[in-house]
Length: 224
Image (spheres, rainbow, N blue to C red):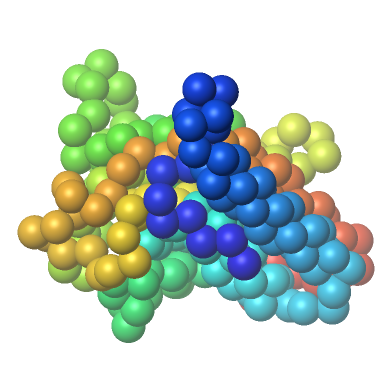
């Protein structure tokens, strides 16, 4: 699987001419990305449970984007108060900490709630340093509870065939070094997600939606 721990290869023709190895690295990088995308596409026809499929997708996507952590949420509209529920969650720096079975309200107060309610994609360089004119905020209690520091965040909606939001795919802390994130090193080893990361996550989110709709056609419930 592709693992991008260096800035994604974006270079001019002058740089390529001066160092042909850069072009080789770029081609190899995109080959790895293609392999991972094809792997996920083939997984659409598997008989995995939803949880197993989401775990697979999250693991693969985090490696493709060098993300330290990530979560996939589904919207639960079965109760009067609609919520956005963690389905799977992974964190390399805090592997023993889990936020599964936790839910946030379906409103615009949180990052995930905002994406779920509006269907917009958010790409934030620092979740703790947001413009004052936005209504959503990063809930710092998440970080405090697991002794973590969320910085860069990329969150895209999961949409069904009717264009209705059914969940959110969120990646956290794109890394430049394969080491655990601490409160002391987070500024040094994390950076914002790129436009390519955004396109990849949107494409993979569409695959998740297809898998969920297939399960619904087969009569499998999403929330048990």
